[in-house]
Length: 404
Ligand SMILES: *Cc1c(COP(=O)(O)O)cnc(C)c1O
Image (cartoon, rainbow, N blue to C red; front, top):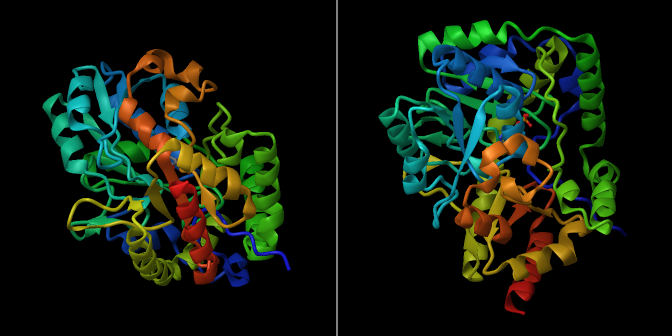
């Protein structure tokens, strides 16, 4: 019998009852209560939410044009910044964490800086205080990219609140999903109004809403072990057989970022699934604890939260392998076998090539540490469908490749 295909991240599976349009209540209100915030603003994707944030801040500081992001992040961030007519600057990473390096950030910050984007990559809680300190010194804003960190907290409150604005993604594979969706939060009442006014310009679009609704139905139908082989496993195998890792990691994005509202039915689906999210995340956190211990006992380096009072979420477990050679050997042998291995992102932004046209001068920024991270990171899915026996085999495979 063929083994099941494990999805690359721990997404919350939908249930058929989620798809019924009644009995849901107000999604935005429920999400705000779940996050413990005053209110949330819903957008059609995390990228669109970021664009609303950038346009709002640009309106408040029209003379500023640069946005500083970690060099290892989602290419959609680069596309969003370019589509807003802003210039991206790339910050190198720390040696010991996926955070922006403070010295590098300090050098990049200037009176041209509109915003700095500390990023809670793969659910790991970033050091936002350090970014806020650098940004404040030059009068810039801080936008927390919490696309992969819905449910993560720091000092007892949701991530996204230490900076001026925070955003989450509701895309497939990022936990709670409306197929595509985005969420903006801020603790600042003035900014809340500005974000709201900017967001109000994104209108309902029937074509996009129909398309996303069909995609959400398809996701509900196929997000189970058997369906995933067709929807995820097959295309992955094909991309790998062509040697196309960028496609295999789903890092190939279109330039055009659609902006429209998030339709009522998809909100209702999100609202019902949200009721199961805390229990699901707790189950994942428990699974993570055991597995981190196992990985560490084998001498592997796990990427963990570094601030003592922070609690991340665990869509994946991230490993930093001793060398690119070892990492690539594991992927070459096991990426396509459906056991849930993947890459957060394949490259640092300048190394894709296909995003050069939006990077501008940032193409030439020196980011050696981020590049080293990009070459040695490996993600293991935290989906509950990767059971203990199979996880043990994944672990043995990784060990074999690292000791070779
Ligand atoms: C996915 C992602 C985004 C964009 O979110 P979408 O909802 O997919 O548009 C932004 N930043 C990071 C770090 C991401 O992983």
